[in-house]
Image (cartoon, rainbow, N blue to C red; front, side, top):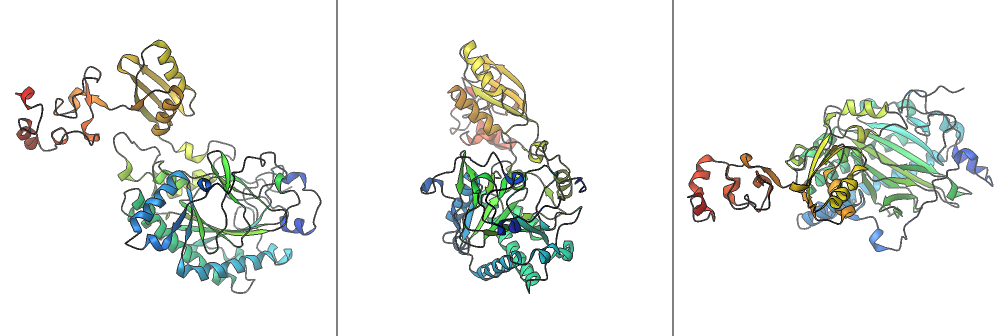
Length: 484
């Protein structure tokens, strides 16, 4: 009997799928058959459901840079995945690595087993996250290697054949790191941050490479190449070694194919990026399906921040009305939590969410309205407490939730106009009667939060005591007479 894995950082040995496929079985063995594979797939001819294209040449061209960065921001926000084209100097490195990957999987099983995974390690040839003898298997062989920084490499898992494999993988990993650092900088700019806020942590970051072989399958609709998941990385870079489609991303409840493009890199955001962006970008769910007639190869690079940095929302994204959605912790602590979480337990991303208090203004004219508003959020995942004050038109809830998701849910389920609570206590503002602050519709004792309202007059947002008093009686203040 095989040793039971103690955590997610190692995997049980399993048979080679490619060797099974070579035997050309008429039916798939039961351990590979899955019930959840048959899900709706989007019509790939629909132009609205095509993964966005981002042009690297435009990202580095001052004339087109800001336009392309905006496209990048929209792609990360709405899809969490895009294809990066026109990589120029990196094309040759990718082509060489593609050939080496195919040559490795074409080696005999005996040669590949020289680099098989060992107990206590995910690295090597085999499958990932196989934790029990009863667990369903994926229709995929892989070799997983930690490539950067160089001191973490375990060369006993690095194939010596085909020739120059190690040297090629080193050059490829360095190229992927350069691309990742550049992309992280552009992503930061898209969020209104300085490029270094994200890119610096990835210069000396950790980079893992997974090379996949998806053999042809007699019953592709009954198996899965890689099951649906969101990546644990900052970003993930995927290079298809051929033109066989297989990668799918979940978009609006449908699985959309990512059509392979020669010399392009598919990049998706991961859970770490979701934390760093404070929930603005999400790690999309994606999977790999297999083909009946053709096998497919791919190279995946997982990009993580350096071990001496912290993972948490960028400070510049935290402000009143948009609090931190996630805890900040060291990279070391993050990975300890990830690898020691229960396979079927609470996902790490949910475990790192901060307890939020969300306040919303929504008009409630009767008890029926109150019940409808309460019902709209009570069943929401993560909500622990709901309080309603009908006379103030105020809904307040506490829980591990995203404020924007709560607001959208209230709007959708009640059909009412709802906005984030715009008021603060009367005494919290120096000039409660200034333009943009005083509001007749505000509950008693409340005025508008001028510091967070760009429409509020300058007097309301003035920080200098001298400026406040000098402008209080100015002709520019429409309430000057009232002040007198």
